Image 1 (cartoon, rainbow, N blue to C red):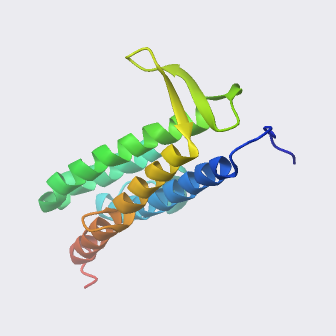
Image 2 (cartoon, rainbow, N blue to C red; image 1 turned 30 degrees about the horizontal axis):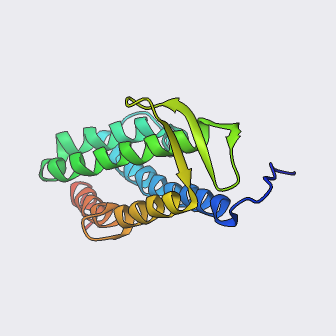
Length: 163
């Protein structure tokens, strides 16, 4: 299948956009597994497959409910991470759903929706690279999603008497 070819395109533009999608998928992988574990505690009638297929907001709700009712000591940490997840998801929505082919130029692309200040959102490959770095740090650095996943998983195992 062919894709849009742009004369003089920055070769890193598509690469960085693809990297963002892969990084975001990694984030969603962790959230999906946390939601499955939370569901085991909450004992809803949802299957693991239903949870994995559910949208990101539903996974976040399941995780939050489990934390609020069963793992209270993680509430503050989850609240901060959940806010970050929301911000990265908003970027993902902009990058995936709001790009207009007529706004793609050779060195950047523009999102149609105007921001509050009346300017269009524009992403260059460098902008996307910075966004990717922030997302990778959010997932893998100290106090990130992977560290939280470990704490969450250990707490779930204790609640299920698996440890």
